[in-house]
Length: 265
Ligand code: B12
Ligand code: SF4
Ligand code: SF4
Image 1 (tube, protein in one colour):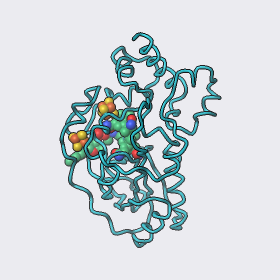
Image 2 (tube, helix red, strand yellow; image 1 turned 60 degrees about the vertical axis):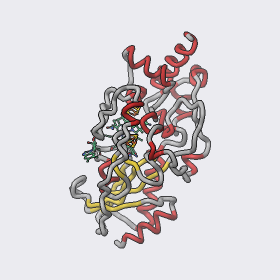
Image 3 (cartoon, helix red, strand yellow; image 1 turned 180 degrees about the vertical axis):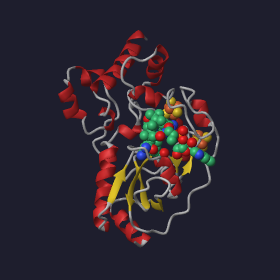
């Protein structure tokens, strides 16, 4: 299949950055990968206590619906769509597809959207002219390493996922004292954006043009929003949001730490 056919159909769906690589290193059952970026930045919002990637609708659904439409428009019959699931390394695929470079914060960054984008892709059996992988890296200013509240940014393009606040906020069960303190200090109900917010590549990041990520945003949660909801009601109210995927208990727990932290002051 000609690359331009994919590029043209992708543009109609709002996908302005797509790339192609061989599937050989990622999935033996397919020939090629078509990857795309899904920007989610909505501009500076004060007072939020959840991560930017959770402001809009759940990206897993948005990405898979958009890529399903693309696969349909291209007439693909055998294909598989991924975003954030499965054992594939999404960042490696994006880099191989020419969609961005590695940051010290371990994320993939590009000139247009900084690092505020999701990565989604289609495995298929078409032949393409493959993109040139991006072999540059970020500015290596180390602002992310210095700002990380968990000391999780190692400085070699990897992070210590166990320490990472984003991971802590998503963990089920009881948290350690230092983890609770980190949630309180950073007012983090779900996710963490610190190593992205300080990155110079994000200074002029373009805003998202996807309605799903720019309309009906939830940028802040209060303990009272959840307090009287049953699990079923929680899912009804927030089920389409990415912060809901670990269930009500995790979000409520984090909110309770923040609420307690405030009353102590
Ligand atoms: C597990 C996971 C997490 C874990 C661990 C993250 C991590 N960095 O490993 C936690 C919960 C902490 C997490 C947090 C976040 N995540 Co996450 N996460 C994933 C997931 C599901 C798997 C990642 C994984 O397997 N890591 C383990 C190994 C592979 O990572 P690693 O040790 O860092 O290895 C890298 C380096 O070795 C590097 N590398 C290897 N060789 C070389 C050579 C050179 C020269 C260089 C420069 C680099 C390099 O490449 C490897 C990755 O490609 C991916 C989706 C997927 N399936 O890929 C999303 C994904 C990485 N997450 C994503 C997002 C958005 C986030 C958050 C921003 C969300 C938030 N706001 O809270 C944070 C960011 C934290 C951070 N600084 O990384 C996006 C990133 C998009 C982007 N622009 O890069 C992804 C790709 C999901 C998606 N499809 O959009 N995440
Ligand atoms: S997401 Fe937060 S805790 Fe995790 S590496 Fe980045 S700054 Fe550190
Ligand atoms: S803050 Fe600096 S070191 Fe960290 S990813 Fe951005 S440019 Fe690289």
